[in-house]
Length: 448
Image 1 (cartoon, one colour):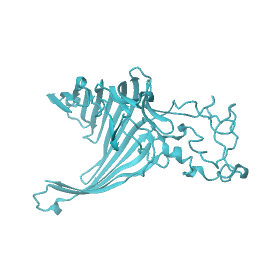
Image 2 (cartoon, rainbow, N blue to C red):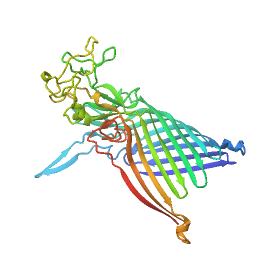
Image 3 (spheres, helix red, strand yellow):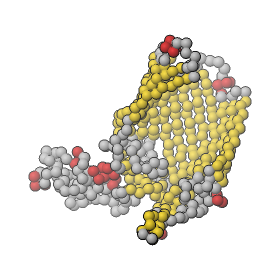
Image 4 (cartoon, helix red, strand yellow):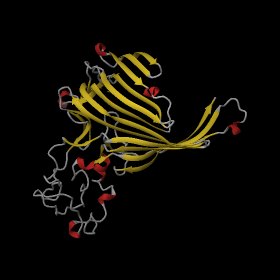
């Protein structure tokens, strides 16, 4: 890829700021006829506090608005079809067709966004906030769409429709204490995003990824980008899960029911920074509210008896894994077809009573929300008395830090909700999870 970028800015009398940019990119991963694309941006800021004059309440006030476009290219080697060459068998060369069909007619992705915001600070910068409203549309996203395997391929690269995101972001800071020897600053951020698939180029649903258990992550027309589809329980009109005459749950007829959504309700965080003389301590707490994830670990592990929920005592006070004749087994929570409570006891001796063999995939979709102590830092700025008359260093600081220190709360059992198979578009699927890695370190900062 090569690009040309230009920017121009104007400031009028300290209260009006206008910026404009234009960029041209040319990417070799796109077809020759479509490999050059332009995208501009423009922003305007009005510092209205300049008209208020000096006062003890409003320290700063600014309104801003901007429009921007962003272009994006295709993954490498996604235009022309080529064979995969394998290890020769004797004198015979071996080649195979890739599983994804390339597309010689791809166009660059394009995102257009509008944003407006208000920034204010009060009481000589002791309190402040920054609020942003935005709306953006991404068109012609380059995705591998699932196609019939009768074609010889599993998927094909396409440009897909229009996805809209809109939301609000809020940043707030406050200095409860701001003295010579002690300073305390609190920063809070909160963001809420809602997205919707507006167009898919003539199709109703685009599979972003598939996993075991018949679970898929999808872009469905009229739905949020990232819906989870799988088989589900069958529900009675009064809301209970229907069980069959044998006491086992009834499954939906297909794996095409929407059973989850990977998008969180909101995300946020709070940072506290405390400084006493030359010593500074800060920590960040991260929060994610909502969003769903399918756990393949629980899907299999509950079936094979790996988790404690598959053992213990039942409602009769007997071992749940004991034979029915010895008072074992369980009554699953549900209703019969006529709506009456389920009272049929089923065996938990054999494989699968708690896992995928007797439960739909929807039973293993969990809330992926969490509260985490994301980071903590302790820094000591060496005082000038220690540095003495040293003219080489203007400042020296020593610090220690830790990251991913503590999962304070989560709803997904036995795993970190952030652990997953994929990234980018393919999210909402977890399996083979590793323990969360905590990172500890020390640093030395020298200022010359």
